[in-house]
Length: 401
Image 1 (cartoon, rainbow, N blue to C red):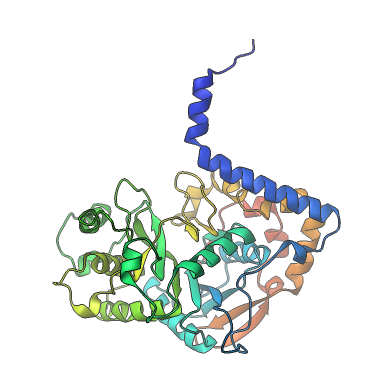
Image 2 (image 1 turned 90 degrees about the vertical axis):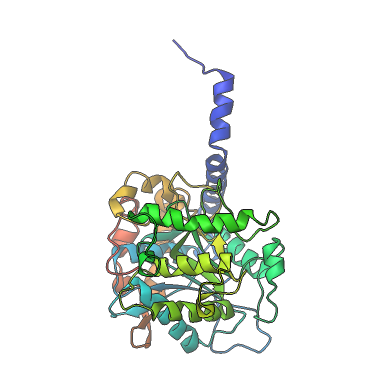
């Protein structure tokens, strides 16, 4: 017997999942376009474009700002190889820093500052730093939209920064961290000995002062209090103008110097975020980042941890925590990447990708700040990264990222 669900039930279901449906429709359209182009013999490079790639060492004084994607990775790992494959197929050059070093999360800002100096990055340039072992790019369009949107709405210099414009939503804070429903800052008790003992409860409790400050100014657009779900800082993704990161890193260094027990950069940045928003005069001036300079990527244009499924058009999907928890979801999440469907379905596309990977070099900086261009095929197995089944299995993250 054929059963037809009530029309009202269908409408409610569609409304509930409208964001997922829209995202999948876009992905299917992009995948079909890719397959059509490949079937006509189009070269792989014609399918890709880049808002990010240019030389940092031979730039004119009037050159446009540059966006650089960076991961801190002390060793090559399967998770890093998957991320790098996705970057190459999204036409993004990712720089890996810290190779061979002794890793802990709290060292990442110092490594990034060293890289910015070595690469000659300018104040107006943009750095995007993210976890390298549990992320993947969704395709060139998401990257392009995220970078262009950030460049269009953020101050290119400290002199051009306008905190009032950020407060009112007319501009974007020039330093954004990933936003996350989860609240995790396990080391805030090093400077805040009050509150609940449980790490999660203490984190939620401490953020309450942010929501209080936000709600006291109804016109503010800097932060999004409850019921907004993605409202807590996650250090696994950060995008900022170079000048803004340099300024904020001074407060970070001051707080880091308060204890030799720090290892969690997310705890440090969460405290600095809270103090920047609340402008608490009790907090030392050296620990207070200017109001409006630091906020979160609330629209998930750069980063998304899909805890309840994918939505929007993020440049990167982030799968933090224990890798096994993403085992069931990963195959579906990969289908949100425009490059995954053609890699699965088109032998021609897969062979073109194989040829591209054999000739592609990746930029790696050792912990001693020595740059090296290494062929992707020499550090990652092409057999594995071109196998959709391998890509769909949560890979090992290794030491860092």
